[in-house]
Image (cartoon, rainbow, N blue to C red):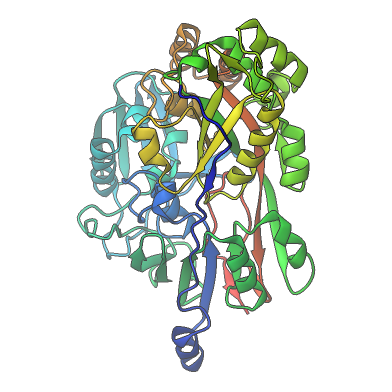
Length: 516
């Protein structure tokens, strides 16, 4: 690493002004008597890998399911238990064969009836183009017969039905196709008529929705990454509801006419080490960094209590969560000792440890669309300075470019670690040799062995035990440092009903959403 002489903090906060709120389209809607809804959100952007609403593209399935465009075969209850949605049930015939019974009377917004052949076409395309889904599902073949879908996997996939409830599993009409701007025909209560990356989308009600009548005629989803802009838009009534408001603003909406729906989620804010960085190949350095991050201070002060300090990827309420594992404790003095044991000491009195004439400096990469991440970077920069580590923060919407170019040492991100109610998801996406989000090249023989066991284990209790062992393995290696679990809040304005935060962080705009 090159010697650096000062702390450089680059946090590029993208500011997206509201386009159209409280302007011509609103006035036109009022004059025609249509019910129109304005929703502010921080997440619909390329930075989050949500460029459109095509569930077969990156993480765009989140937009598809959150905005009521697409639905999956199964969904999650408030207690994160699997329940029927577009399917009515399933049968595990043998460890590689699943038979799924589809719901009658469902049509796509294209007008086509949803049957097994349509679902087969959708899933076939999904595993053809979506690497993460292909790795999760391991589908060998699918056969269709009326409303009966038979899925055969290449090997046992105990969590197959859970994976199919991931947003990438939204069922879309492949005969209707995917438009150039990434629009699709789904089965949800709304369909998108306009999709514009980093700006927002326009939704209109699905007149032929199978599960009730949507109550709103048009919904305008606005991408707003600046917290002050979103707060002002809520206060002036330009937005009817908002997701992702700054924690410091929530108190402004604590009383009538506003309502706040909050829930604990498995979205975690965590950092992963880049094993290509020479200093981070030293277990003492990784342990020192992990032990110098003040998680309680971060959650209670900077997040104003809107989160809980984390040990691992899963909240304490999960059977395989924080209560069952141990992370490196916060102990700056022990961190200094670990650094010294590896030869990192402050030889020139400048406040930073060095070795062989080089300061121990870390390039901390993150992004601004999740308000917690710049705050975490701020906290880490201060706490690691206390043990003599220089942290240069690069907080940018172009974070994926820096990852691809290897221009980072520690990458901090946000991720829903158990969106399927099953623990295997986090490890297969982030921690294994073939994981698509194993950014830092982490490898553990022990973890690979445990995953081999997990992949063939169907009993939920046994899977929980294995998950605990897997979490403890990555914590013992300090390959990942988990800072906080998110308390998700959605603020609704006067007269808004049916907008409820969900622990999986998926379902937002539903058939129940209304505005009086």
